[in-house]
Image 1: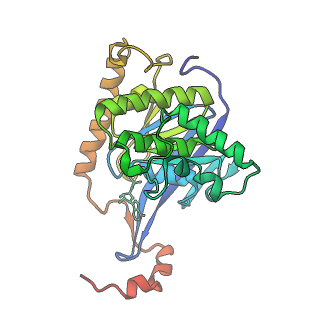
Image 2 (image 1 turned 180 degrees about the vertical axis):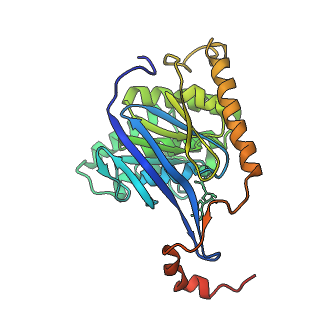
Image 3 (image 1 turned 90 degrees about the vertical axis):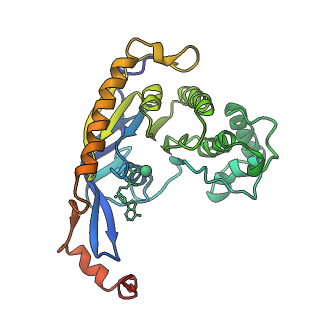
Length: 300
Ligand SMILES: Nc1ncnc2c1ncn2[C@@H]1O[C@H](COP(=O)(O)OP(=O)(O)O)[C@@H](O)[C@H]1O
Ligand SMILES: [Mg+2]
């Protein structure tokens, strides 16, 4: 399998999408993303990089159906995204697993939360299969406090993948684990995703991680975020199974190019005025004036 060059079906299509937040206390609108057009193809591993606060998490939350765009459209499989769905699963940096549940009970949670037609035995089999895939065999009955950070994140990954969602949304999932564990988890994710043909949207702060995992890397400009450039990672897979990816002839060139782009944006973010993109006088603000949060603001 080659990483790029295949004609693929568009799965997630953002078209001139603008999204942000209503800041009730300040009575302002904060534009997080502005005019974002980006297509994620079926089976593609798309990585988002960009300075802190540029709207990466917002973008993933729009795809997850948790944040509604103010303008433009985002479609999933040809239909506008209207709330969360089992076709899209999230993995979070802070694992978000339940401390009072064992590994296997954490992983089976999605089946408890949503209606499905699987028997108890079928659910148990799916849970056991994914436990094997992520390398947690022997820890089924362990509680999260008994696990390392890397193992907790394996639980998070397994819980997201156990329902075989079409899309995996990952928000800096390996940001909190040590460098060596991170490499192991990256290799596992690559294998898992190649196997299942999953579509992935993955946020990272690390350019090395972006090159290791991405078919394409979208560099987001500082807030309000736009797509600054899309970089194709023309390196075959598996990239992480053996040998050092850093010795690949393309690695250095890609890294330098991405580094320059991201550095440029990060420096731009430092220079930018804080309230550049905040809007006042927008009709949406009228709604805020009646909100109790505004009138109760103690003003400190
Ligand atoms: N729930 C929220 N309410 C208000 N502002 C938010 C909220 N979430 C994010 N923001 C703001 O939106 C901007 C983009 O945030 P985010 O999407 O989290 O960026 P990134 O993930 O790239 O660091 C930031 O200025 C952030 O402070
Ligand atoms: Mg974020």
